[in-house]
Image (cartoon, rainbow, N blue to C red):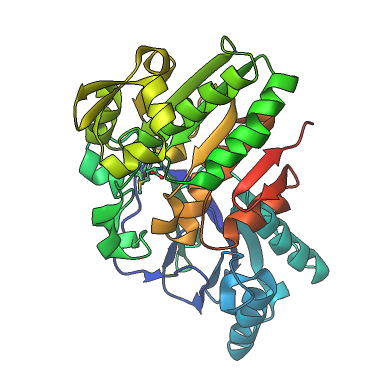
Length: 379
Ligand SMILES: C[S@@+](CC[C@H](N)C(=O)[O-])C[C@H]1O[C@@H](n2cnc3c(N)ncnc32)[C@H](O)[C@@H]1O
């Protein structure tokens, strides 16, 4: 019979007296302790008569400190020893984790089993943004789970989360997160031309593309122009092509819907044939996206972390977005993005670190085709 009382609470837990356990940290002590779980896993221990609790916030991002399960348990074990306790003397629980980062969760379970420890699984592999509070004094463990948010204010949404969580890698770069260009990433366009279009022509009756974090729409229309051009060259101009651009910034999306862009001569010259074919001229410096491409494109305000509700796309693109965010938020974005990839489809997701690659490959569902570009295996 467990002495620890676990409950899911409806309101955010506010306990300013508690110790905050950050990513990759462990804490052992009698005082209330809290952590934001996000996509990480937490392994905790509780001793009812000594009124002692321990939390570890395991990220899986590195082998150091509390980031990995073995290191976290070693650390807790050594601190419990100072209190004259062993791990096995305490109640143990595992909570949190994300399906996509399942390897982190699995490594925690493996470590507990290797050590032959009894543990309870409490609300694992579920909703993000979970705040957890362990109070060893009254033996309670409370979990607040927020529903996925649909941002209403551009400002708040673009900056993506509670600023206190320091979700951005570099706070100064917030100002520049809307930057975009036509034909910005030749590698992405090459993947579309040489891998995605041939595959959809071969295997699917359509090509639906989701461009997540599309800013003012230039990325959507660049992908659209290249896709239409490649389909025309393959003698399939009527093939079903649809593009969805999503962003949290309604202002950026409004420009995408309008479809008018002031272009430098250099930009226009670099892809003169495509601009001529798929755009109209408004004045000497401005082009308007033409009807053929406009009819196939739509825009919607959506936080990437909400994922795709029902639709599965042949290609999901998220370029120049993740790099502004901390690894934890990157994983949440990845979780949202992968909800939109159909089996046999593709995802292009750029990130400067190896985290995205490692996570996709560890899921066993994705095969890497080139840097940032993956195909989802058929079941
Ligand atoms: C640097 S722009 C990249 C635009 C485009 N992908 C490109 O490569 O040209 C990053 C965009 O991501 C959007 N963004 C940031 N956080 C987001 C979130 N949580 N959900 C959706 N879009 C987000 C920003 O509003 C911004 O328009």
